[in-house]
Length: 552
Image (cartoon, rainbow, N blue to C red; front, side, top):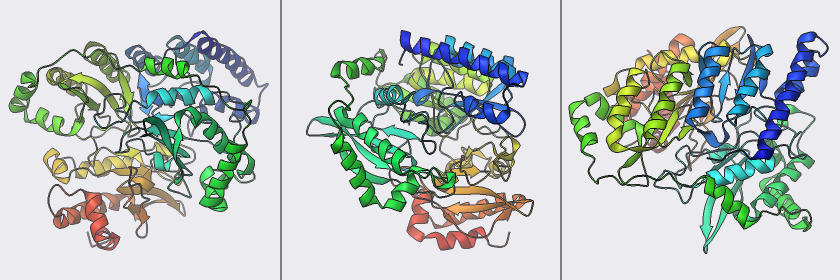
């Protein structure tokens, strides 16, 4: 993974010192909350429903064991013993006292971490495939380009005060695990005539006006990609709706201008760049950054992992877990392990300090010191020898991390909702936990197969409800919480927005309604291999809507 150079370290240390002074002034009353707000947002500090919340950057979702242990320490010493991993591959602490935040930031700086640009109207954490560098199906490792984009965008003067927040995602596999088509900018690494470049998608996003991104350029050579991103950002800065925050995202600009006109504007801006304006990105620098992401020295393993195969025979629970939580690795004898943060009865995405330490220890002992955060709010051990997996599973299971549900119906993406967030209209965690109970039987869940449920507590869509196969959106109706159901969303290479299928349901009616939809799917699929989303797309929304609102 990328390591800080002297410039990085000094920049972060100076930022911590600066913010320490700002916090002191706020606590002393010489800064009002309104004056403090833009300062704290630039340092990842939100004012939530009950307390300040600190969001910490995890660039492209990669952590070392040392860093994860430091996050565990912060959870234990400054929070309530847990942290919440987010869809932006970051972590949030919801109960850190404001007076302690400078000290927390100082501790983060010691392990090359920070909270810069995790909030505010700037380019946020650039995300990618959580299996990057390990996946069989990737063209090349996209993390180096995420790092290049991070360095380009951090404190860039044109990007510090954008019309609205801005999110970039990068992938390099045909199967899109980074959800690039629902990002402000999505980059898909391609190769053409021996040249590496990017397919560029612009204008995706969720929230109150969801959009699937437009394909703006089918191939931008890698040597030109930062200049092309500059052109995209300049057009956005020029025309973005600063007069109305609800219309300020780039998705609105692309829609209002029209795709053809927006592309014309970007291409014109790109063509007009003078040589003195272009970004000099020497090949030597690109290669230097790529070298940080060289694959680990994986020891040769037998073609038939005997311990792994024997353990599956002896332990049915382990065998089930291997069928869901392992992902094919590009090196024979290895796999990528998903550590589910969605056990029954736990707020999705939460991990305790002790659980973080368990994962850090496993990564250090067996996983070449590499840990990832997925946008589905789970942790990943990307380089794991198959014969080590049985022991790893037993350790995870003992720590409450053995749920066999990756990409299954109980592996939900869920925002904090009204339990924490002052923007929310409804609670999301309790509803998600009640739905989980309906599908708690492991054999039943395995029979259902891949099915994504995403839950948001308001239209800001932090739970990505628009792109869940089943989306649940909390709304307020005259002071009472209701939940709208969406069907047919997906965030992959066939990205589509879910459709609200009828009136909102009371919280107690949601689990039964979801159960009826799932049972209808099971009765209509052509075989157990046909996924829920494929059955829905084959039959259309109406029969699923009828099942949803059928008498309970």
